[in-house]
Length: 438
Image 1 (spheres, helix red, strand yellow):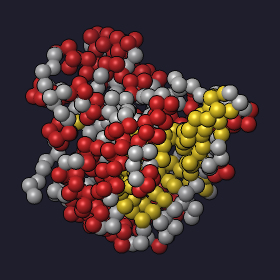
Image 2 (spheres, one colour):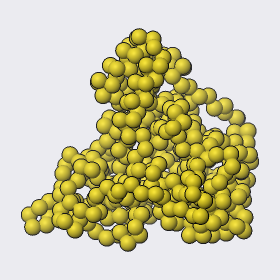
Image 3 (tube, helix red, strand yellow):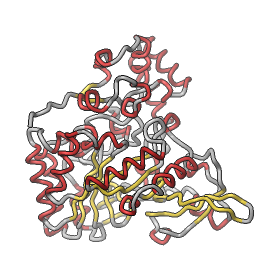
Image 4 (cartoon, helix red, strand yellow):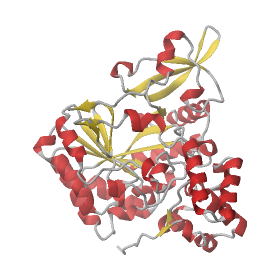
């Protein structure tokens, strides 16, 4: 199989778009203005094998990866444009930083309630929200082969260290995990951990396979590589090394879950993607897929039905249908909760039982993962039926609660509790210290 070379394109390469489509100088300028606030990166695989250039403005992958002036409020767009015109670099940086702060760069109190303590100080690059699961952010894995423009991890990519989560050189996260025997699952996340070379990824994986972390029985790796650069698993110059490392995880007796971010069925249709899936399954990895509902990308029943059907056929477990988090350019991409529920119900009712493993629509909030389970009538009041599929307080899991139906609500903060007893499930908790170990 011929080896493909990954080519990355950022804001400085915008002229590459002229190779693919007729695009005006004004459109490229607007692209650049938005790019001063939000991150942009695309690669040759997305450009050559995913985007349909015969209709780019209607193509899900063009919308998924390209910037649009409507991602910024008009006043913010104008402020950035003025700062660029004035040529004052510091002023432009200040304007961009102020806009980013208003875009809620760290939703769900993740920097205050999720970062654990070890010997009285926070553990860099680690989040511990649920008792059983820790998230690890490898410092070299906080970028991607291409950026999804809706991504809730966008602050990782804008070059502001104060917004970035990443491990430090001491890798104190390993000491924390060795001490916390309640942790059974470790999720390597980003960015994309598989952007790292296999030799670098090994530094994070090997410490989890020893006897001191025998309580860690599942290792998850969150990645978009299967969708945006499947050659990572097949023809990259260290693809064989990566596969060997992943196989070592399986042979150690751990459950290896590749948590794939797949937004559209076309990502699974290329020969390169199918080859990558077969290679991962051959070593005993378990493949799970998740994505939010994104307006203009997958906000229809047919797309999700095709996606889940294709995944099951190829040996992938449909896992979550998410609701976009309350961060970044969400206003450009979000759909109402009622619409997300209709899409979920429409799709899940048209697939086999094996594809109904997908849970949704799910809001990943500071309190936990809230599932919108349905709509019911209580005494003449139309109501959302909700439950937690995961929660900081395990006692909340699968306890139904209710909110007044609102066909404009797009997030939990737009919901009103039905009764006083439902209020605690929808109230934002007071900030508190994350779990500690001394």
